[in-house]
Amino acid sequence: DTEVTQTPKHLVMGMTNKKSLKCEQHMGHRAMYWYKQKAKKPPELMFVYSYEKLSINESVPSRFSPECPNSSLLNLHLHALQPEDSALYLCASSSRTGGGEKLFFGSGTQLSVL
Amino acid sequence: GESVGLHLPTLSVQEGDNSIINCAYSNSASDYFIWYKQESGKGPQFIIDIRSNMDKRQGQRVTVLLNKTVKHLSLQIAATQPGDSAVYFCAETPYGNDMRFGAGTRLTVKP
Image (tube, rainbow over all chains, first blue to last red):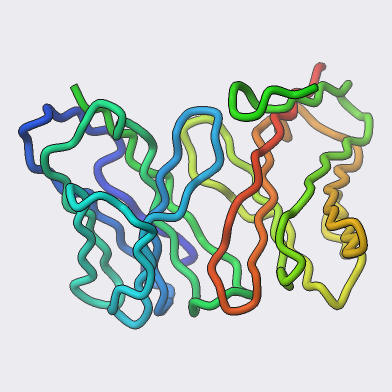
């Protein structure tokens, strides 16, 4: 199984809502990532988890809160988002962090903030 | 010249022709490079990778060339097919750091 599964595929939320994005992989990977992708732009790194610990936070606003409950799951909790946060949110995994390994990506959650 | 960030560079080719997509990377310390293909509504899909101790690597219908002197990476697709139409991203990994993506190129294959 070389799949990274993300749910939901689409999400529409208001600026006062709280929602969560979910990501799951069963490849035994110990590194998991959140990327944000705006239309016609490359993915931008948000967070990196290594062995279930947050190792990189790319100065992401606190209205985005990541969580790694176990080595297979990664969540992104959303609260008080702004319309400019509308984007495709991609989860990825790799066998380890620190470079030199390909990332496996999910299909993403297309988020619209109204 | 190109207006950075306003639109993706595009490449349009005829079906059956060869395609060459170019990428300039920024970090001379990068030692691992990947090409990803992204179709509409999907996540990036791995195509081919190359490490800095190589200058060429071939896959099925694809070849990646690495020129470390000028920090340039290219992806060659042989006998391009309509299913190859997508956005292609190069990505680099500086040693000890995590993956960063280049701007991307939209490939359109005309039947």
